[in-house]
Image (cartoon, rainbow, N blue to C red; front, side):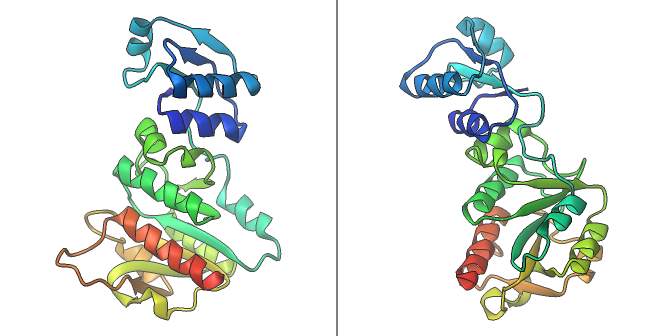
Length: 238
């Protein structure tokens, strides 16, 4: 596949993960900066015509970076993540339950990067998989945020609990999140845009938390909710 967003290409190159070649048809000032970055990081360049590049990567802006994966930092398992924590007391995990909109998924990853989330856990095969949209919407954060995929989120929650995590589900009928002490090992569960957290996952949460609001619309967009919850957690930890 090909990454075409400037931020997505730039952050993938900076991450040091395998990629390339960088296809270049025409380079404006921003694209030239990325070409220089690619050269400095020993990424192979290939000159190509605009017509040819449009056929390969229609949404390009003069350049496109070939990658052999989905563009995300998913080369980690939950078991390895837990083992690597060792004696570390503080950790922050986000569990995504059926987030199918790639724009929301990418925006959530951008929040995760900003608020130093240690791991994002999602169900394989059912979560958002539009890699290019996710990469663009996350502004390249997809290359930095660690992600673990699992066939069974219930089992993943049980494993996190055994590792000392307190797990909070996000829902409108929960206790205001600022009233909870968000210290130590914390995980939040965010449900799908339509139906929220599935019953089996909700039953295994230690508590349900909400974001107090005074608006007329029922709820916040899931990516906005993620940002608020993560901000409150980091605010308390500081």
